[in-house]
Length: 61
Image 1 (cartoon, one colour):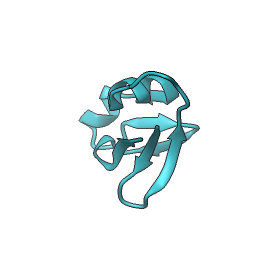
Image 2: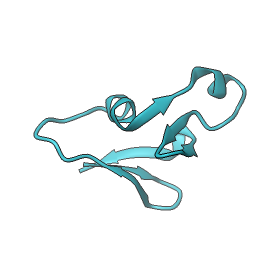
Image 3: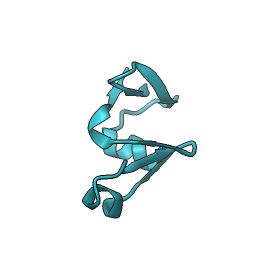
Image 4: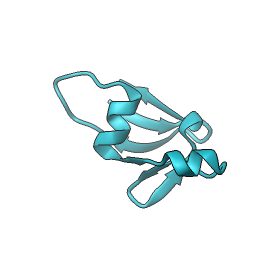
């Protein structure tokens, strides 16, 4: 399964596992989510030192 950026179709992170994840679980596994950034209108998700808006991410098989 992969976390992708839906605006660019970029693969943000690939997870190899034998169980399914929700998007929130995958983000917690791959990086971090910041509520403070969300409140300030900044990108909330950081994965591999890159920042993304939560609404731009999706989890695909």
